[in-house]
Image 1 (cartoon, each protein chain N blue to C red):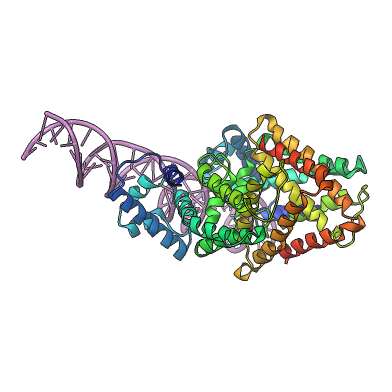
Image 2 (cartoon, rainbow over the protein chains, first blue to last red; image 1 turned 30 degrees about the vertical axis):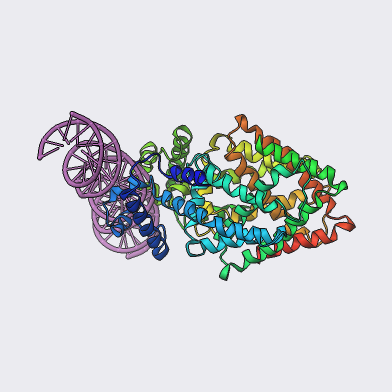
Length: 235
Length: 235
DNA sequence: CTTGTGTTTTGAACGAGTTCAAAACAGGAG
DNA sequence: CTCCTGTTTTGAACTCGTTCAAAACACAAG
């Protein structure tokens, strides 16, 4: 676990020594940035603002973060670390896969609540797979795999049995489904994101039911088809 | 048809009179921009470069296009107009929905071939629904609806009969499917985008088969479920 | 031909993200 | 204590997208 975190941390900025005072400064900058982003929005906050609010020179922000977007990524990584306990709790609380999934999904929404709009900045970068910050790119692999791992754990010992051939793909698929929901949520203009709530309600059941059905004997051909699609995507 | 085009055109820049020389200049700027984008990439090309290559002052570019991204949108709109004939041809050539869909999909890929990477710039803007350039936003409605209309035409008189309740949603769904493929294609790093090719092969069949199956009597409950999801998304 | 009005074009100026060379600051070796 | 080496911090400078006030232009009306 610690290894993963350290690795996710190193991802943000390549190599550094002094963890003593430097880390203090780094956190001060990140905190200032997040506060300003929340108060007046990402686009409306300048890097100079951030530096001033953190009590350092403009250049200092770039000593710790390679770009403005990387501040958002740092936020994302931070929430990711903090999610571990809640995730574990959600999985421990029930064997019902539906409930577990709802748990993971709700946990993320709660974490992002305050910074909903902020994540569009990450998504923007994410669209371009050449971009270092893409959620599908190489740089974010640790966080990504860690999250997929949570879905593997959610499936493990749940009330859903998966066919051998499909099983290895499912955690990643569920993670992608979760990413899709987050995207929908971020851009959901309805009051209190009611639409997202309805979408989650309608699809979690559907997804789980589909997974359960996938074991039924007459589903073989359809499953083969689906596997073929996955194959096409991955290799 | 002309009305739609005029509307799509007006979308790009609000109101203008002289179509004589001004249009000439506008085209010169757009052509220069696209050439440079293709030769050295979107990010690597500055607006000053574009203006210089078009033989005008920097400000002129902004007289015709509200932003750098809007140049990409103009390209998108242009290809959209040019697609009409190819689309009509693809639909006329067969009653087989699979073939028709492949036709539309291939046509788009061919059009974008030369500017594959360029479209990421549009996608980036598209992630943010507040952005004027989002493919789901208000400003791009005309182009969007026009494209959805093509899918309605593809379904019309094809070998696929749709149940009443599902039918009105299908054109939009197919369009979204197509958008998804384009996104995948743009970001597909495999040589000659072989992976996308395989994905299309694997999914077009699947989609059409699903549509055909949706009429079968015992599919009622599943269809109801799917409609519920659509409802959640749209309203 | 002159004047007026709307369109097109210009290029300087602005704002904000980012870079960079130099200064300040550890803290260990001698 | 002094020197050296690596880390941290600074702030001016650079780039590039974008804005804007003014100039140039087109052309219709009188």
